[in-house]
Length: 233
Image (tube, rainbow, N blue to C red; front, side):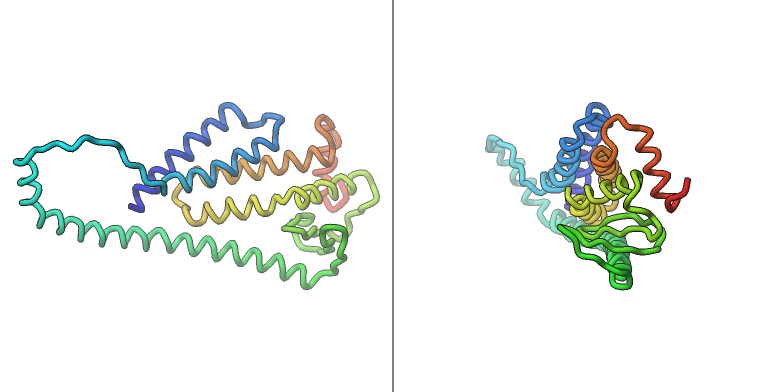
């Protein structure tokens, strides 16, 4: 049952993923792409659970029926062996899932540890946190982690701030957590990891558009250099 479920989920998510690659990727309607990718993650995980029954016409075939009854003992033996095999498959699938979820949990705990040890300023709809950790500025849920030394008053600083604030306002963290949890539970489906990667890219498109506009490539480059160079470039 588990192997059959995973096969169905892989096939469904694969079809939707390649459709995205062919017709939707890098198109300007980022809000729709975000909805599409999230829908694929949910639909491909749910559809294989829906029982499908094909209509059939019963046939009165008594010799065949007698043959099936005679083989009943062999069928029971096969069912027992299949149940044991399914149990081992379940164990093999669960251990990596728990390990990946443990890594995700440790990263979330690290984020909140940074918040607890850094100066926090509550603001309208988010919490502004100044930190010196590598990777800042970044956002998580309603927390905006700002790199100490970056200015909020100059043009590039304002763009970086709007970029991260858009992630918070658009609730992008919830999207990523959903995709990450599904990928962790069904880690052997490669398309869930690919869909998660595409979702992160769409999030960045949305935030960049809000920060620098649709065609300001020079402003976009300046914003990236400013954010990753501690204000120097």
